[in-house]
Amino acid sequence: MPEHNQLKPSNSSKPLLLRSELIVILLLLVFFILFSRISAGFFSSSMLNVIFLTGSELGIIALGVTLLIISGEMDLSVASVFVFSNYIVLISNQFGLPILFSFIFGIIFGIGAGFLNGFFTMKFKIPSFVVTLGFMIFWRAVLAGLTNGEPTYYEGAPTRFFEILGGQIGFIPNQFIWFCILAVIFSIVLNRTKFGNWIMATGGSIQTARALGVNVFRTKMICFMISSALAAFAGASFLVRSSYLDPIVATGMELEAVAAAVIGGTILTGGIGSIIGTSICAFLLKEVQVGIATYGIRVEYYNVLVGILLMIAAVINSALIKKLLKT
Image 1 (cartoon, rainbow, N blue to C red):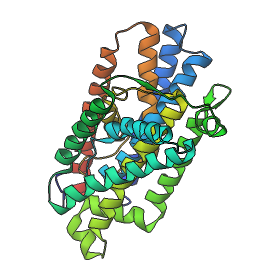
Image 2: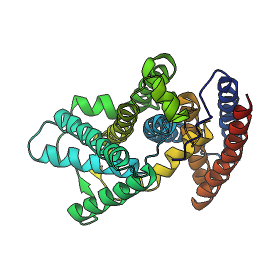
Image 3: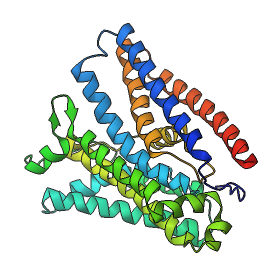
């Protein structure tokens, strides 16, 4: 990704990030009220459950994508890692591993996929956009070959582990609880730890980060691995919840994750971003998707609206960069 050597993370960016977060919260409330009034089926426990569930899955992926964008890189392979981790968990269980260990094996695959993304990006100086685009295609193609493009179902008996990951309390899915835990952890990591400072410094200015003693290679590698590990966690959780693998599931989710990050206040050039903004925006996008579906509007218009919001956010980010450069 392009590097802006003069753009450094500072306290001056915090009010602007807060403004972005407040805008996303306002949009969340506006769309919620709108769809509640125009669609009779929107404000129901089943639809709210779908929003919480799909928003949590997108949100978990978007958390890792946000950290990586702040560090100055991009990951377009997360949706492919999401679905391929389904296969890893499924095939591991079929070979006799208990579902818990199969789940862990799926997460390990995600860490390995992130390592490959980071290694090719950092070692060979290839733009991460190109590397992760290649792996996005690669993992999908391999999975299509292994499954012949057909859904595969989990045949084991549900366990307590299924309930922990895929159960729900009322209309609130347990996946939402896991998402909240991860969001709090990574918000603390980004804003309250030395490693978080390294991430923002690396994305803001590599030269300055190195001058301050930051190990840029290690920082970005860890962010790549976190991004893919979270995608694998979300994917493995999906398998445990749904008990089936579909090779085409999560198609386009990588772009939704990027949109959630950018609309939530993360700047594509790196150095500035908000875990809170991303988290709220993930639910905003799924709220809009469910609202459009319940109102009977064609799903293509969801992508139109996401594109519009993304373009507006890009314009705002551009203005934000110019303002920061003047401070």
